[in-house]
Figure 1: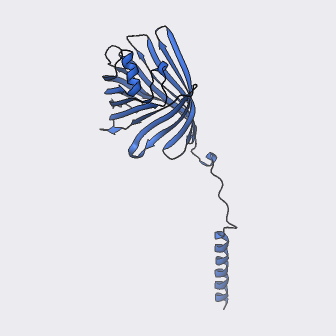
Figure 2 (figure 1 turned 90 degrees about the vertical axis):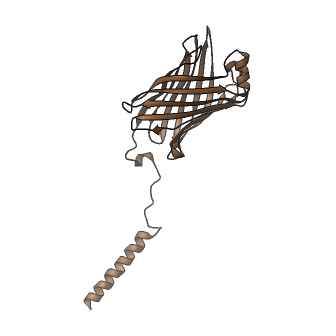
Figure 3 (figure 1 turned 60 degrees about the vertical axis):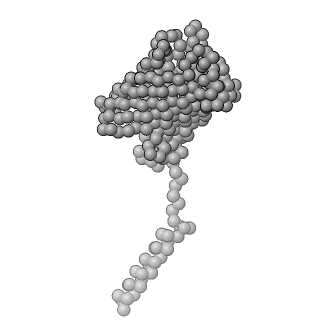
Length: 254
């Protein structure tokens, strides 16, 4: 009799505990998501010179660079970006700088917003302009690296650009990288040599050897062509609409 009574009490107690633990009214509410809950949510600093290269373009032979980096956590970062070119045979340089706030919106993509500053030296003169930026950067399916942005200048001129890259691992150290680039504008901006519509298209391939992940010289080939009204502006100025060049450079990150 005592055994049955103890069994009944144990069964009743177990049922009561299960009901309490599973009750939506009494169960503990999960805390709101916060970066503070992530034990590995550290502050990171990253800087990469994606391209530091010399191109064999007839008559101008430009030196090109593309550098970017960030400081921040997994979800929130501040990015800096710069790219441009300077001619080795003429006193002419064009460069672009961006400062962006970046917010992770998926596991693979960041939404970015900020400002961009363009600066160009041509002979003894120079020109500059500021633009607002809204961009998207990350890794698309099949490991395509995407960096795209929309820009609005001080004068209200709207443009956009897109760059896509892919790493082909021939070995753990020898890596090929095809690159696609294009840009488009809604208005003519003659002082910057930009026409409305698609402005240009570029295709390239770089083959790098990573002595370490942080140090990788490369060689490659690049083709680019101006399009539409932008090409007409180049022709009117006596320039080349398209060119094919060999290149060599260095990729480093810190």
